[in-house]
Amino acid sequence: MPRPKNKGELIQAANTNYEKLLTMIEKRSDAEKTMAYDFSSDEKKKEAHWKRDSNLRDVLMHLNEWHLLLLDWLKNRESGSNKPFLMEGYNWKTYGDMNMVFYERCQSLSEEEALSRFKDSHKKVMEALDTFSQEELFTNTYYPWVGGSCIGSYFISTTSSHYDWAMKKMKAHRNNCQ
Image (tube, rainbow, N blue to C red; front, side, top):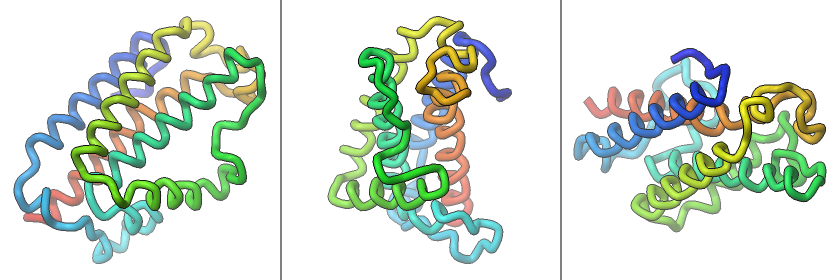
């Protein structure tokens, strides 16, 4: 699916990948549900997330936490503040460490709770998306606090693109279970 270039495409991509992800979750085999994610034998999977997430709960909570980052950051619109997107103390060079904070926060949750939180945060992100016009979403520098980019790119990154990432991880896990 090509990168969305307007509000309609963004909504469609986010919802399409969300539904695909939920379908993948529903159709998992017993082995996929019970086996831990382990990609250590694949030398191509070097990024930290391949080692970090050990089950579906971890993946869903990662998505949920990034939804919450976006929702919190969008409050700049109402408050006129200039709060950065990432959590305080982190930047785009250290966001992997921030992802580990998210990982640690979710370890006591069940998969069912993680799925519920993910569904809820997706709904809230889509509701927030609906409040923005085409111009607000896809005009670079429309809001000064976005930092030269456009808000639409943050919505894409935290929805359709991130859901695609999750599905790739689930497919790799499925392949390991066969």
